Image 1 (tube, rainbow, N blue to C red):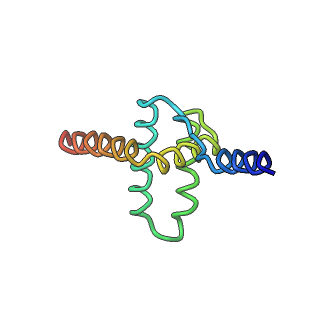
Image 2 (image 1 turned 90 degrees about the vertical axis):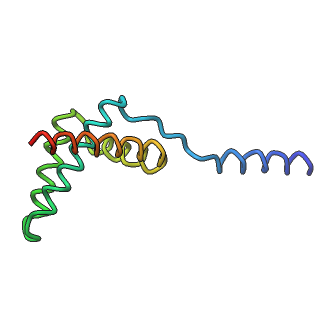
Image 3 (image 1 turned 120 degrees about the vertical axis):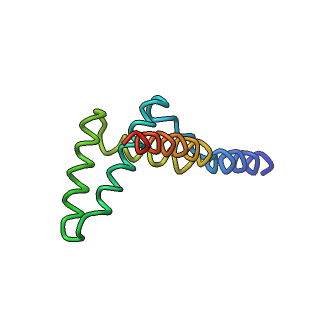
Length: 106
């Protein structure tokens, strides 16, 4: 009986272990994708409601094609950022600073 409890405890501990999500790309690649995602969202926010969905889909497809990613890789990227808020914040800060520099150059 004691061994059964130990075995059950062993399975419970390892079954509840948090899944480790590896970075889906290099840091530079993640910065480029995140920058483009932010720019896409900003473009979409300026559109009328009736065209937002189709334009969003088209821009997402262009983004995936540009980086040679598929939907699963994009979802993995989003999950990685969601599970690593410190890295996500760092990447967002870098993208914001890059966009401010570009805006200042205009």
